[in-house]
Length: 275
Length: 364
Image 1 (cartoon, rainbow over the protein chains, first blue to last red):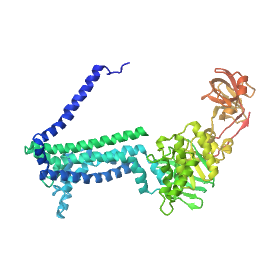
Image 2 (tube, rainbow over the protein chains, first blue to last red):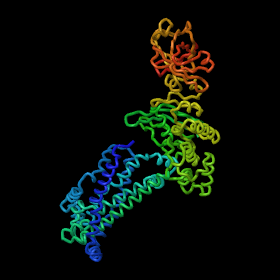
Image 3 (cartoon, chains in turn brown, purple):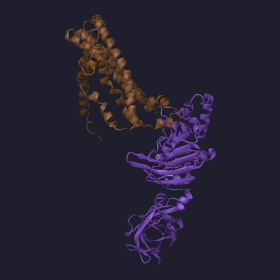
Image 4 (cartoon, chains in turn red, green):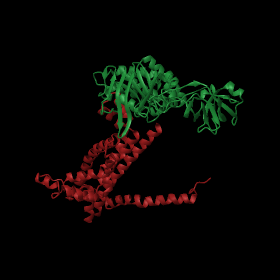
């Protein structure tokens, strides 16, 4: 018996359409980025990449990502632990609040931060009298990056920790383990893959974030310009090759992230098959 | 180590999970907490373990292990072994590491040397007959094997008391029987005090020295399995410990009538409900002067030492169960659809007021 939609024509048509769309919307742009970046030769590409401002933008982007990850990691684990291991009034509201950064447009997030922490902002004006500047400097970029990336780790962990329950932790405690030992030897090994996955997603978003950062950074070349902002500026200055060189770098980071993610998924599926 | 609970109660939000409970468990005893789900038996076990806190108000309760007051002692310092319903083995650790866990997390002063840990773990694995699976992960073991690992893990730290939450609930009947016998032997050999939770009356009666029957957060009766079965204190205990047949009717002038059925009883006039166990129902081809209870056989299960027969009648709200000896079964040529007469050998009656339980049994 033949299942519905299993006729050779239908099958070929569907597979063909999927392939065509993937090629048009995913693969072609990616190829175009690299083609444009190298359109005037490797030397020009290299000159653009090794430009002082580009190098600074790369550095700033990576530093921001490196600072964001540990903060989001600790925040995400603590939040997931809190929400899945304790019951308290407001637990559901907290779980909804976690999603705010996903729901709010990053530009709006940036504007809110500017409103609060800018020189004329509610908190910013007080900080200003103490000579602390957050907006239009790297701390501001870090703050909004944390805002847009903080749900990733918690979102990965909460369903997993809910499914696993707290029985293993209870067992560890009845056997005499301290809270710290229980976390390191029982909780953490059980969530490590979800945790790594959350980190990968956090990193991808932290590196690529444009909207929120563009509002609070001021985009000062060589000072507060991240790679996505730098790319935008180059493009506005009609430096197509320079812009695409930066874009190629970002695309490269994205590809590496995807490879890491695929690698993790492959490992996880092998572990499942093994057990 | 004896366990003494004084005035232990528990609320969850607005529901009372446990009414104030007093319970003494003697040293070396194996006690079963038996009750339907929601009766508070698991809550009580978790309170003994320290995984749950008893209410502090209106009156704080007290938990004593021997002479040691452990009411405010944290789980990790109570020196208990806890076996979880679904084993709760550490899924990323080998069988060996699971059993060794309790020893390796001891503070340095008390922790045995690594050689000694190894020797002890293998001694335990030998005891549960799993030494050949020491390097496996829990997911690679059967349910029965996982439960044995979980027991070995709990015993590794040499607990004062062993607490088991529905230890055999998730296993199939055959494995359950084996493990039950094995646990009883282990208990007698090592002589620790154990408390286990179950909803299976057969398991509780077979395994326990004494059974605590619970319902709705209350203790209904504490007794040896034998006393419990022969002299249930109230209707709940009677009904929970086995199959029960109901006979409802109105008594007038010493005759209980229900539709076209009637039975001579020595009771005052009024509505009555009599209870009978399946083995208290005798079947015959004729009614007797004392009883006229016409029934029809609707199902027959000839498995086991006796034949189980299901009986229906117009005057019965729910079918009756009767157990018949194979000899009688053959003598009466029983088959489905056959009409016979039931004769109670004995019946029980409980007053509605549960506070003053009273049982009457009489031979009819």
